[in-house]
Length: 493
Image 1 (spheres, rainbow, N blue to C red):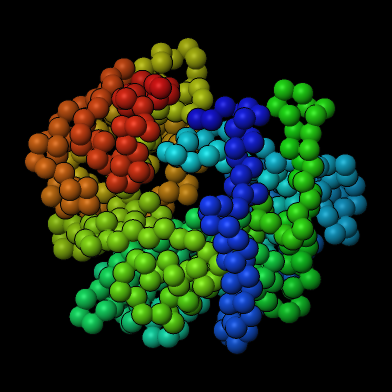
Image 2 (cartoon, one colour):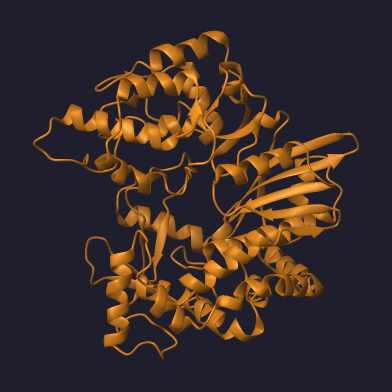
């Protein structure tokens, strides 16, 4: 976890301000001009999407009405939203373009308590505030619904937005990636996507990821996103885009009186914006549009197609469909012959045996008992329906979860796992579970016996865990701690 220091804040600012591939002089400017040029050719395509999305907004009223009716809806930040709403009323901010409380600056600050990705610079948050989120949380929610309900058919293939890791939805996604219903199938969520492309009798499959996504969006993309909304709501979208034009203030971590304020020349996607998922979706839809107009024979062709739209993408060739990864899930063939989505084992390794901050529960309860209870809730929450040797052994050792700890664990898994009561329990054979990772019999035995038997206070490292972490996260011995910790407090560095 990165420390909240000036050095790390300086590094993190590069995500927003850096030039992509600086060694290629002028390439970043070239990509920006390409994005503007490509989007200018999409007028008809965008108009068709606007018409198909329109009916979803029939139940939407106005920004003020939606805020009044829904600011207290169930949500992780419900109490903060209620307080912000009272603030808006007290300061009569409803009829301002900017709902932020008076005198409040948009602070750009380090995202703390986040497990660092290997080789990646720290992540910063554009703290627009809860007031600003109340302007857009309903409007953007309607657009996400519109995108999810209207699968795009274009150039003989399918472009599909999958809004959550719902197991029924992911099962359909992986079925289509294995056997695409047309010329191609492109599934996306924000900047994450997968592609299946038919080349003669062969199907090529790829995991695709946008590099430097936040820094790659030009004003042209913001305008393309705006054009997807019904005309009568575009003035409200302008208010959300204005939030991304706001100056940001970066404070000295040691002396808050020292600060610098940066004012963008055009809207920039701040990570705190309610537009984040939508505008990243639009970027991926445009990339998919370019791919659909191309002949794909390898990952390099996808990279070229993305470059035409102003984006740099990384492309992983999945010669075995088990290597597909979407929303941290991969497909496995279960004992009943059905292909089902399974949360990656790498996620299990990184979640297990630790807790961000203090362990929940009374300090009067011994640390070990609290650790076991937390681990039990974690395991059952991460794999509510899946049965396989490793997880069964780990669940048996951790014990039965308790409602108290389930409440603490639920937010950790809310964006990773959706537990549908009606989804069936399924069993994954060992050979199918480890197919993605290419483990040999000895490595599998070590994981299913030695690793599964780890408990409070134990540390474990083996070639099998290293291989899983490298496959799912790109973690290697050079950029990961020497051992995984099972003391349920923190990983030892």
